[in-house]
Image 1 (spheres, rainbow, N blue to C red):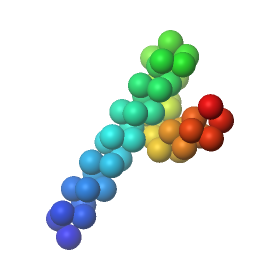
Image 2: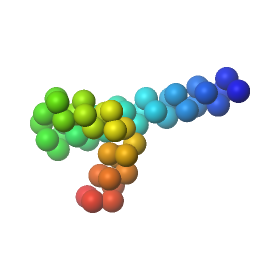
Image 3: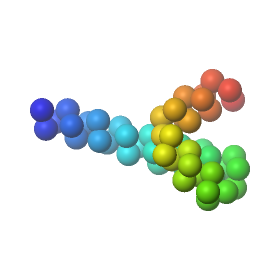
Length: 51
């Protein structure tokens, strides 16, 4: 059970960091990067579909 928890935690952390980097690169705004970091993988999936 612990291994699965660590894998999920790592995936969420990676998704948050990825969303924030993509957002900051596109918008040049720290506030948008924080907001998109909170949305995490939802923003990453949106970015992949739209762009």
